[in-house]
Image 1: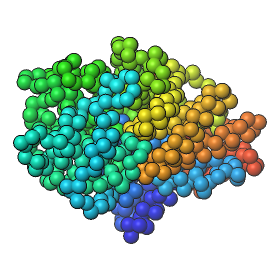
Image 2: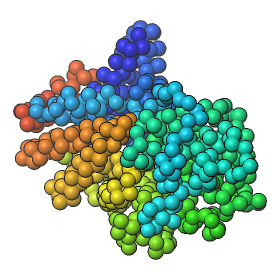
Image 3: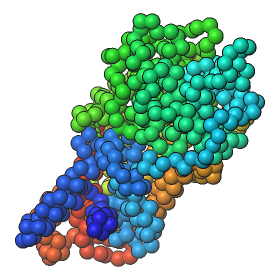
Length: 606
């Protein structure tokens, strides 16, 4: 029964992509149906559809195993679902006007995934049986863990995270001081193995299987994490969270990072009193990771900025230069505030954020960039001297310009999608060309995506020389940038920028496919999504290029109101509207689709 219901909902979503149109259709059925039972079932369906798209742009999305979770409006998954709705609406129209349209490929790729998102949190990691006390050779442990502490690059002091005294931990395990007890406490071994597990994900030689072996040992020594009470658990939780993020378990990562934050607050790391420099840096690492995951999932952060009084990192003997982590923490604070103001939590946000909030957030980001020390200026660094942390920091900044190049993308992503939808609607429906009120935002979004793709390429080149591979968050930034670049081709299909964007998107797809060959489920999913979107964009551009010499559909708002008031059986008799297609004239039977197009034309683009 549940399978049949799910199939029916999937069919309905395919035929009527717009949630609003689906609700209207359900209401019509409810009015005409005499059976009380049918009315009750329809009301239930109406409630289900109403919950798909909440007022702040958040939605309940299902993972591949059918488990539904709340994903906030700031999340890339919610944004991707909006793209899928856009694709399915346009696809429903294209299959009516072009018999050569690749309907099956597009519909299967997007229709079946509407209302879903990429995660494997419902799937337990398949962990091997391991000897918990097995130690890898010292040279191998040192090779894997050294990048978490220093880098072989010239700018080896640029570190945007702080993991504590990792190499001291290695020394303690392999070469204990004379007279000390060689029996190590479990949390020391748990942290050591957690660090190794995380390090394997950023190494070109280590295999995914070895990472799971380290993770299995770490969890054995960790025991019952909810009963953890010591400061030493904090670093262990952080590293396990980062490992799970790389294993495509976002909720698991979110939980571990939150537990690290809980313990840090328990011991007062967020307060200025009696907080050492190491504790201070550990707290700001937790803060940056929490803000990143909160934005990624569209969920509230672990604590408000007003509750934090601890100072930002400063120079201290024996510790790396503090500038990288300090700048990362400042950027995380700006991004967190931007997400709160633009998307909100608990219904305080909007799918159409106010312009002032976007501009204020962009201002803050530009000030952050303007105040960067000279050593953090990418224009002054060559590929060989740019550390991975420096490149990742700039990718994070850019990404958050798009949606959140990753800060600019978060801030400008929503008006960008509105502009794309309007442009496509104008291609099919005659309407007055309206100048976008803030076209600069649209350009800023696509420019940030382009910069992130360039940074990703530079990161891969630098990592090749350093025998390192890009991290999951780097691939995440590259994937989101490619989504924007592919959609941007619809805004100016014939320009040189569109051709450059196509090449950049294809490059990103190739890199994601290569990463998936190493066993990364996340990059495999990203590659599949991007490939399918790219195929759709190619099909849409092909159709649009052939529509240049054809008549467009002439539909007025008055006619659309008439469509809504009529039954579908009376549509052709009462209104004479024709769709001029590539294969001939077809009766206009998809009024809901054109209603959606007109809605896109009327959307306020800030």
